[in-house]
Image 1 (tube, one colour):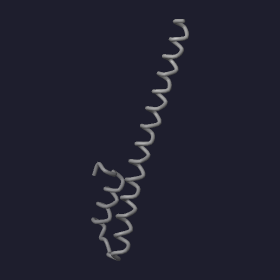
Image 2 (cartoon, helix red, strand yellow; image 1 turned 90 degrees about the vertical axis):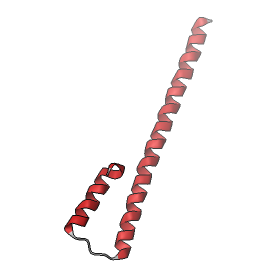
Image 3 (spheres, helix red, strand yellow; image 1 turned 120 degrees about the vertical axis):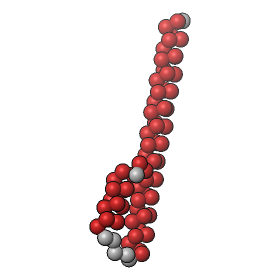
Image 4 (cartoon, helix red, strand yellow; image 1 turned 30 degrees about the horizontal axis):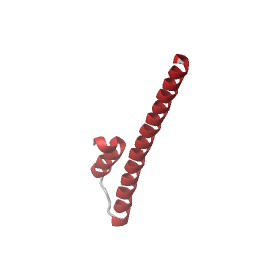
Length: 71
């Protein structure tokens, strides 16, 4: 009886771990995709504005894009 209870607890624990791992993966992917969309929208606006950037502006933008939300 105790053996079956332990198996059941182990299975429940494994399911919780799998669920947690899946949720974390989904959240990370959502964050990555949102960052990608934001960067794409920014580039689209820059291209559509048809403005010429100097080296300083380009380097600042490139640095921002490489760092993502940490900039």
